[in-house]
Amino acid sequence: MGPIEQLRDAIAASKVMLDPQIGDGFVFGTARLPVAGAHVNVNVDPESEDGSGIDAGELVGAIERVLEMSPQVWRRIIDDIAEEIEGAVGGEEVIEATDLRDDLAVRSVVVFADATLLSFAAPMQFPDSCIRVQLGEDFEVEDVSIDPEGEG
Image 1 (tube, rainbow, N blue to C red):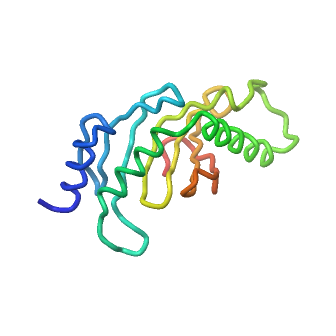
Image 2 (cartoon, rainbow, N blue to C red):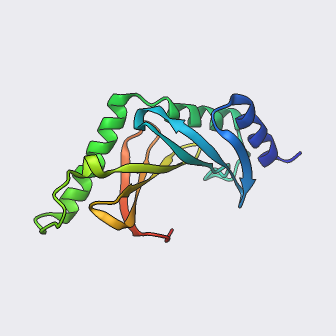
């Protein structure tokens, strides 16, 4: 059994994801993100930046940290995303007056050993796009991008 299979088995044993599978070098499945009140797709990337081996325990721990995030941390992330986007849009006129904080709906989570990526839909304000957010180890927002749907 290879390292990716061992990671899948460790994730399955931890029960952090439903029915973890392997595909394209990732372990993926779905999980409940209680703080967002949603089930999300979760992808776990076993590759580390330095090329070292997979630490299944570390990655399972990273998944658990995301899924057990406190409401306060989640609210800070949502606020930071909205402020970042509002700052980038500036004074441009918007068609939809809905607060972006109320429009953001998390769709997926990608877990790395040292970072987390979140993907959001914002159907009222960005109906044809996906908002991608990179979080650091302490869930600080490091990067926000708005990508056309289906890209990246």
